[in-house]
Length: 202
Image (cartoon, helix red, strand yellow):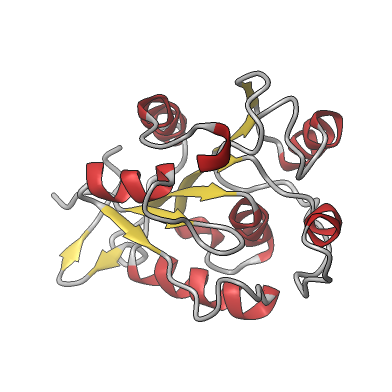
């Protein structure tokens, strides 16, 4: 039996060595970083293509995303590979226009996704995140069909707001995995990983 992969999906500028996503890669031996060619110039189509490559290589993975990475992950609702995603932990999703305002430049990252997600998900929200208001995120989560886990007034849930190693995040990921148990099990043909058939054992 293979171990389900955790795909780490950062946002703008990636996640530095002190970021909780970097710690996640150390603590979770199944974690794989979805690497982008240019972290400082996000391109919606290129970033999505890279994420889809990772999903194809690691079917039944749990996605752990942050900031614009959460928005990217929500775009999978329209992807032909969405059925290969076991679930997603969407931490501090960032409003695209607000991100442009905060960084004084326009990012080519398309429109905000509003389609319901076809896989289990959980949005982790802060009430004073500069990248998206809590009210807007709450409405967006409803459209995605995703519950919200409110962790209070903690900024953008990044290094600047005091988030290095984040054990509580691992528990939230387990919650998403538990929800995925209620999803239809993928067939072996859909879930080939390397030379092993990887069915859902989360």
